[in-house]
Length: 96
Image 1 (spheres, rainbow, N blue to C red):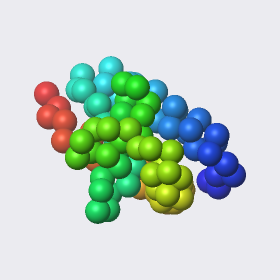
Image 2 (cartoon, one colour; image 1 turned 90 degrees about the vertical axis):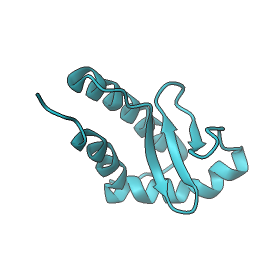
Image 3 (cartoon, rainbow, N blue to C red; image 1 turned 90 degrees about the horizontal axis):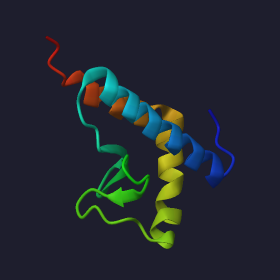
Image 4 (cartoon, rainbow, N blue to C red; image 1 turned 180 degrees about the horizontal axis):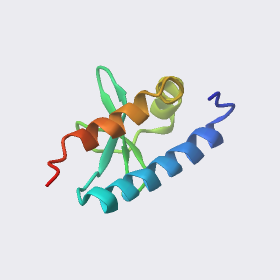
């Protein structure tokens, strides 16, 4: 999947929020945050408000920070890492 612009990425992130909500309903667990970039700073998608934030302080990234990290978010989406992070959240569920 090749993203052309920021709008496509934002639309994909909206879809991810819906998938997080679906997983919550299906498995009965809360998923508030989804990692987008796992490096020095962990960058997350906040399901509640759709914000892209640093996990350390849960503050939204500034426009300049977002522009800097957007290529890495795009790369992780295209490589399937973001989907993997969502799946990894689900693997910790205790099925009864």
